[in-house]
Image (tube, one colour):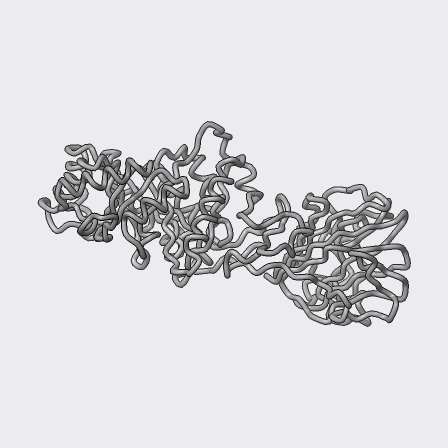
Length: 512
């Protein structure tokens, strides 16, 4: 089981790093073929009342309504509240059922499902189906043990047809049945038997959520939608779009399947900020509803409170919605006390640090895996660069990776702006205008270096392919005495003074 590392939320289009957690039952987290746009298709959002289990069912109805969510899935034995006696059980009397119906109607919420439930025999199953039919439910969510499937599934299929209520097979973790196995087991039965896929419990069991949804295709009736801190048993819920479960990718996959069911919010992390985090999750879902499939897949839909704009990083509240995501921090302090440079050679002028001649500026701190974002401004003919993971700031040429900054043309492609200097040319030769600010993002993770220049991904480098000192993988020479695969994987960051005008601003870094 491999945990997904977090992605920096200020990455620009196309810059997301794809982490390698896949289970044998699932496919890649990115659809193999981009889904065709279905602008008319919107996924219905519901609330699993367990999210609000600290209160009563009546409380859950009111809070669901306040969020603008229309549908609700009840769970067994929740205290009813709101002047109603008892708990949410199929054996409640007709008067109590009518009170619940009146509460739901007044709140503009529709009760659509009940679960997760089990029954000992046909008599108990009939009680559940009769309750579901009387309450007008679409389905019930069940979880019979796998060793009873051959006995229980035929019964559930028969009762589903008799009562006109569908049945969805839910999954808890450890043990957790691979969705492909459930699909195969349901093959002999009608479409009234399907899956309530819990994408959080899939993740806790090591199944990558998007691939698991794809494996459930054809039988997916509903789901408990979640975003977790990691793909691991100990993971917990975080606001959608801020975790490792590729929430946007899940939505894109549901669109691809033309999913007609309901995605229920089931937020199980007992955080003091529960209602705020649920609201942020709903807001992310609403934002994702408006996005194109391409934007969902590329990761361009940001959670509430996050931004693509580096200038916004220090706004109050940025990065505080989840412990999963640390806020990016300033690379340089206002007094430059966390940097080394010759006195007077670098100074702040308004909001920018400017080279005045006299050598490079180096951070005192070392960085291994990180995402760095900054703006730079050149004058005509300016030459500069960003040094990464420098292990020796005296002999930096052979002990640091340089991202090239250059105004104008270069003598060879590996010297163009955005290049990994003398090693890898950028995919595009972008124009750098004198006196104009340009945005640069660098992501370093293990052996991979990515460069995004003015919102265009220009470099994706695998350091391990540079196996020989002085030679690039294509056989062309470079000037370095050390093979890039042997470069330190942690070191200091530097701003180059090449004797020509250069200024930097909005320098922020996030450790990965």
